[in-house]
Figure (tube, protein in one colour):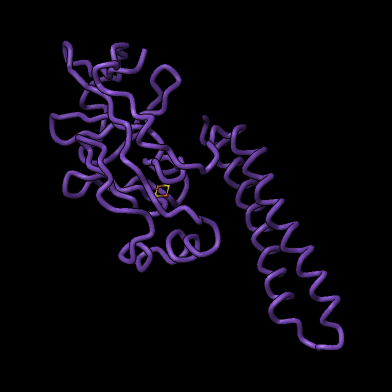
Length: 223
Ligand code: FES
């Protein structure tokens, strides 16, 4: 996706999302702070209408624009669907080691699959491109404020809600919305955990076998 298209998409999503959020917040205010009790019934009806419209608008936004922009619905990825390494027999070239920044996750597409590549020195690891918590890109959105987080303690951190996974095994070692993450990220963490994400669990991530052939990284994909 070109940066201009991505910027346009993120702008539309942002405006639509903020409008939906505004309707939801407006609805909540009308319902819980009705003001003059003599007109409270009108406020109640208006609040319900705003709330339902805001929720419907937010849901519609994700359903319509998400697939157009290559953004998946924010539903969890289950560990039970992980494909074992023994079944990854379709090898795809993923460039040279020096193509990847040391210690910084980078997303690539391999035969239409989104894969997060992580270089640690001369060793390369490959994990699923989308976080198992809500299918958001583990490497963030390019050109947006949500960028990839550097690898710490052999773990990659999802920049959206802070879930953390071991790069070698894909095991989840920290769940989303930890108090540490929420303190550092009031909007992505604390606010979203209260208003937008009822699922607060991440599961182990898919990993892919990697080997180097003549200086070229080869990643094993499912057949
Ligand atoms: S999408 Fe990764 S922690 Fe929520």
